Every structure is written in structure tokens, then in C-alpha cells.
Image (cartoon, rainbow, N blue to C red):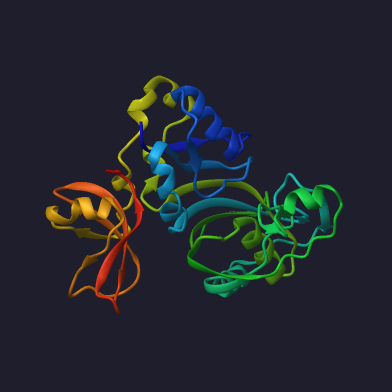
Length: 290
């Protein structure tokens, strides 16, 4: 049993627990997830089982989409409404034009500092674990890309914004909410989050834990379904065995060094990488085996 599961993680379940649920339902030991989703959040969590676990890195780095609610009036240490309040005031909600300027400043390639309570590792230990032990944590900023940041709705009464966000790997939506609040000089925190897409994994097609229990192995899909963001290369069938044995193939006419989804005779073999100087494509991750 090898492939990907488009899992719909409910709020209250950690990503680690989601993988544990999959293992129990399918009776498997080898499973893993791509792109950690906070326990309080819900939405798409790609889970790989069997040999497909070696392909997780090619899924986790894809573009992601979220719907989030931002609440003005408080800022917390975790960036969401589960954390301790560090700033609070009764400032009026910023007007639409002020919010629009802040949104523009947070769109495109930006510098972002992850929340202290995050899975970012410092010296091999997760920042959130250090913070819970009252260890002072300083996280370096990182470059991320916000492809789209739209305000879908605003509530003057509740002092909230409903946001739709498309972003790159490594983006923290909690940080976007925090930074948007700082940009308008009103503290803000994330009060709700749903991840609607991870690459080709879409919310509409995701399976809840209950659905997975009914579907069982029928919920496991071939990995190539979710690798559409990679350039496909069809290897001559005469070279398929060589690829599966880890040997490169001389190829003319390719360019770039991005990973390739390699097929032969319509069968997905694994991930290849082209070397322009050597004019050859070598296997990077073999999926099928000999």
C-alpha cells in the first residue's frame, strides 16, 4: 500500500496525531505528513504511506492556500487566540483604506519572523518546546512570498477580517495577522484558520478521519496525481531499468535543474534531476524499485 492520502485534519488534532490515525486505520507503520498544520487549525494535510514517504519533500515545498480570520484588539505570544495576551487595547478598527495599504505592504516577497510558538528548530529543538520551558527564543526572519492576500469580509462589530491567502512554503499565517495589526497600529491575532490547498491537494477532495475509516486503502491514491507541479519527463522504456538501478541517462535538449517527474511507458518511476553540464538525467528518488 503506497501513495498519498488527502487528509482533512480537524481542529484539535495535531499533524502527528493525524499520521497516527492513518497508521491505525490502514494497519501500516510507514507514514508521514508534509507541511505541519497547527493543532487548532483545520484543513488539508498531505499524508504519504509506504514508499511514497520518500516523495514528501516534493509536496511540502509547493504553494499553499488558506482562509483565516484576523481579530483586532489583542496580540498574543503564539499569534493565535490560544496564546497568552501580550498587547491589548480598545483602539477602533482601522478603516478599509488603512487595511488595504497594510495588505499591499504584506504582499509579494516579504521578510517574516515566525511566531515563538512554532515548529521552527533552533539547535535541533523546536522553538515551541523551548518557549514552553520559559527559554528565551529569538527566531531569525525569513523570506517568504505572499502571492495573494485578499480581504473577503470585515465585521465592525466583531472587529474581524476574513482573509484569503496564497503563499509559499514556510509562511506563517499567524505572523501575517500579527504583522498586519502592527502595520495599522492596532494589535491583532489569528482567531481561525483553514488550509484549503497544498499544491494539488484540495480541500474539496480531502477525507475526514471518519471518511478515512470507511474508505480504508481506497483513500490511498497514486503519488503522481499530486506531482503535477513538477515537469514530466517520459524516459524511453529501454532506459527504465537503468533509472530504477540508480544510473543516469544521457539526454540532449533539456534545461534547468528543477526536479522531474519521470515516467516510462505511462508508469511513474520516481524523481529525476537533469545535469546540464553532463547532459544527463540521474534518478534522485526512485519510487518503484527494480
